[in-house]
Image (cartoon, rainbow, N blue to C red; front, side, top):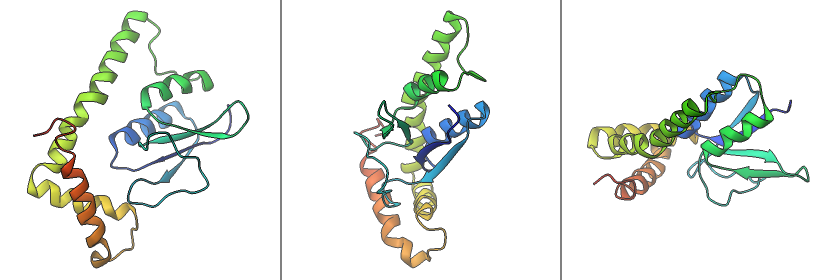
Amino acid sequence: MTETLVLKGLPGSPYTRKMLALLRYRQIPYRLILGGLFTGSVDVLPKPKVELLPTFYFPDEHGQLEAVVDSTPIIRQLETLYPDRSVLPASPLVRFLDYLLEDYADEWLTKAMFHYRWRYKADIDKAGAILPRWKSLTATDEELIPITESVKKRQISRLHVVGSN
């Protein structure tokens, strides 16, 4: 596949960062669209079944773009589309361990990231100040206040969902 991949994500998303690192390592051409809950929608692109970041857009069997989320299956799909510079070990045993470590990191390390980003006041203030700026780098502090408060409220309300009490 020689087309440039399109994905929607945000720099603060650990899954977006994971996939950008993979694309850079594998030298797969891509275009990142900054987007997420508080950045507005990209109306010309299809919506995924579940809004998660990053969202990749792959052509389906009819050539229409399809929104795909979940980094682990996307990595496997990229392996078939782009065989060069594989990230999957050749040994079945090492491949299993690789999958196990990736699954652990995806499911458990993000809990620690979420906890330390949204549990303590200093971290809440820092994340609340940084994350909304991805909507508009030129916005004034006053323009960002309602977005900042909305981001903080939403994320803090989800602490129990990710297992941070």
